[in-house]
Image 1 (tube, rainbow, N blue to C red):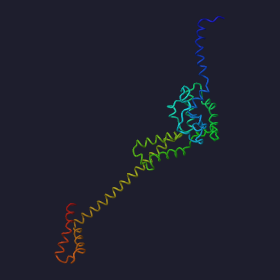
Image 2 (image 1 turned 90 degrees about the vertical axis):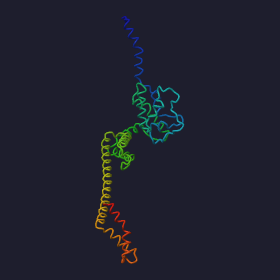
Image 3 (image 1 turned 45 degrees about the horizontal axis):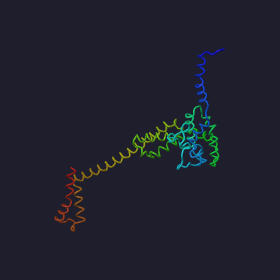
Image 4 (image 1 turned 90 degrees about the horizontal axis):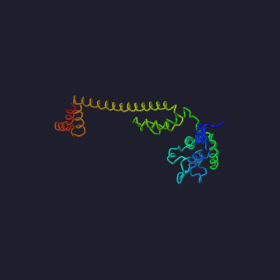
Length: 286
């Protein structure tokens, strides 16, 4: 059977297209490893524990920060993540590995998270052995992904809020500051999204209660001082009206300052003159 010219055209057109589809359908473990190494194997040549420290477990210690360069420095970023992309990578090893998995699966066509696990879990475990750490990567990730309880989430969120706002919300008097702290604490409390609204409502109510009590305390003090002041003024006015204040002053001066105890008119006149300021004060109060 002879093929028509149209059939040949279709076959020749399919060759490059079908070849491309076939190529993109298969994951290149080599390129995938290059991508993961750009995140997890920084300075691996002089630090065998790098993969474990960056993407394994914090028990392997903190990787050095001075003098380190990306394993792909100076190379093409076709199969690796750039320094700019790495600037937003999580510092926690478990979360960094998950982040690397997501980014590299997007970057290397045809690869899946299962390919990452197959290609890289073993390398991380070998790195952890070099660091003297016994671990199983899959178990570590499962433990990290364990959903926190409501009690744990509530404790984590409240601890964060109290630390940033203060026990009496002294640092969150402005609503904008309170909302900012709430947002920051929600970001830090991984896996607590479903409990966030309840904790936020509770914190807002507690903040309002504390502020209301504070206002009531201040108002009570103001009212108390106002009452004391008014009572003193009333007592003084009464003393002015019946002249008891002036008379009391004259008796005191006569008893303590006059040799004759004001038996004579002269001493009595002097005492009266000394207590004249009461008359002036009373005139002002009227």
